[in-house]
Length: 347
Ligand code: SAH
Image (spheres, protein in one colour):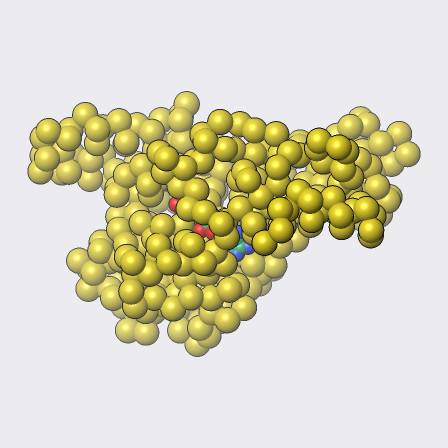
């Protein structure tokens, strides 16, 4: 693949500035296709890589829901952006203890990560996107830190009204600049007269995926657990950030060499899902959710089985639930078929 910086610069020179969503989509496609970014030696760490407790509690939550829904024999496990397959492996092990052994469907575009997933989940089937997921069977869907990687549009308030942000390039960097006007219909009423410089992000790609999942779940049963960092209510702000080697980096330099993410707008996802006829529960803070699912008891049991690791287990639990770590910024939201009971942890 030609160097992405050069390719995007050439594209902008020949066809004009590109949208922020285009920039982010190209950058992340290149980034994930070319490496395994997870873990201590990579660029960032996620909840399932911190501790097996995360995937196990997700699996128990889904197994409990499945039992209360009448234990349909044809349910399928679906995961979006499964990374190294760690969450799925931990969740499926916990599910098997409850006699739930679903077919496994993984939505993943990166060949490197598909390979890693295949090592742990040899029976899985892979999908390029959610449009080919099975129909007519209940789906038990998990998406952890998936939506934060999907492209966003950025709209910016100027003295002349709201504009779409476009990306230009300079010798050593890319830069977002105000582009063409956007209709006021795209801007929530309370933000129409926001001060110049205010940025609003929307993610049509995320909305499309949520619509697809919600319509499958509404039609055939099941639920989706969406866990990510972001805000419960739509809020203005430029949240695009880059991370490399566990450090914040400039998102407008070296696209494709650093992970680009934005805060997930849970309100926008909830609205898209409701329109397809599913129940929406949450979002609730990840810390509260994991405590409600029994992380304290699970940590205690693990520590009793491996006393030498007790401190490490307690530290991992704190990282997942403490308010100043992942406990508050990260949130969990459930989309549930109207005919299914509510999953635990969202009361
Ligand atoms: N869920 C994992 C990995 C999170 S990283 C964990 O919690 O550890 C984001 C994941 O989403 C990676 O697997 C990445 O390859 C995948 N991904 C990113 N953009 C994608 C897209 N547009 N379609 C499918 N998968 C995507």
